[in-house]
Length: 378
Image 1: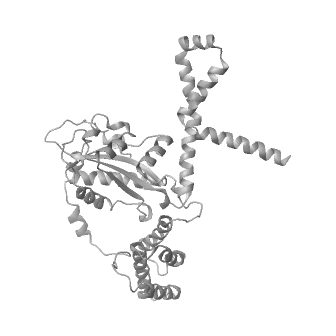
Image 2 (image 1 turned 30 degrees about the vertical axis):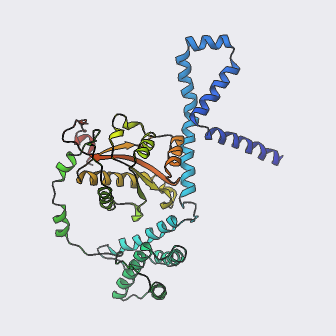
């Protein structure tokens, strides 16, 4: 009896999963087949001619919920498969994210006005477990060096305040001996001291006019955009905040005409100007950088902030941009990634069309809401 119950449950589950895996066009096909088999031709003819519009509405209603659920299941599967929320750490990106999250906790603790002596010992123990594992499996790279520098900063702070952490002392000696022959040592990691004056000096720019002068451009000059300008903009955007400094964002650049046409064919917002674009950027956020269920939407936050920084960086270099949204269903997302080689774990945030500005052009005014409609003071 129990086997029968499990068999029925499995069959129902598989049938439901099969329904979820159907693409929208598959559901349309199934509905048409059902109508053809269940309704006599003469009746069907009258229905098509006299009640076609109501049927179309019902068809959309019937298809909406399965398709809606299927798209959410697609997102759920990708998050479970790619993140380490299930406590499975299988890739370099996943382990790097855990290490980065912890060394940044140390940096944040040291950056407080009055750091507590001996803080974060559980974090230190995790780093001492994960860092040697990372070095052994993936080599001593910049992430490992930054982590080591953060550990030294933590150790020195505590030593200066009369607290010697013996476990950390021994571990640092072992790690230092292991990497003594490494080249390209960086001093990044830990904390740096800056002044209010230095920040204000660099921030004294007319940013109001800078922000107001940026428009979505749909008319580009034919000149090619140098890849070095793209690199410069990406370098500027790297300063964008991200959760625990994990920096999940990445930028794909497409320059060849054939590649640009292929990429833009999956996005409907570039009609009428897509062929003028010099570079197409695709901003993604890698789900492998996220470690818990509460971060299931974090890729959109980190990736969106990064994309905005990149757009303003390109604007500062005199380039025109147009943000192209990626509001698509799962089968378009799958096909696009297959066509471009973008990883399944990478969530597409948006495309950005980039080109040089012509001498004169028309732009949409796109009036903004009054600030009092947006700002809520409590």
